[in-house]
Amino acid sequence: MKKIISLIFASLVVVFGLSVDSFGQTSKSKPWSINNRQQRQQKRIYQGVKSSELTAKETYRLEKQQARIQRTETRYRASGDGLTWHERYKLQHKLNQSSHNIRQQKHDKQDYQYPKRTL
Image (cartoon, rainbow, N blue to C red):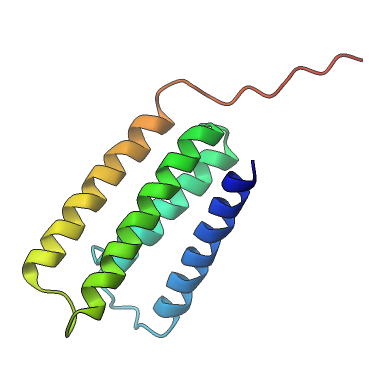
């Protein structure tokens, strides 16, 4: 339980950090950029949790995958001036896989069932 809470907290920190980064961007920022895709995927995960389409275990796995992608991007950006085309390609591929996993988990009919309360 503590892991899930800390993971959700970490994802909120990442989302907040990404939103602060995008705050200074102009309205002409590329919607297909890596940071924008990460933001949209975080939003999709959050919506899945909010609508109970994702179980706690599914959320944990998806958030973990997002954190790995974020760490990879950070490592790539720290190694030089921006991203090379090959690094960008690898990140886009990882984001494609992640997007597929989010969609699959949201639509797998394993909705979180809250315990029934008896009065």
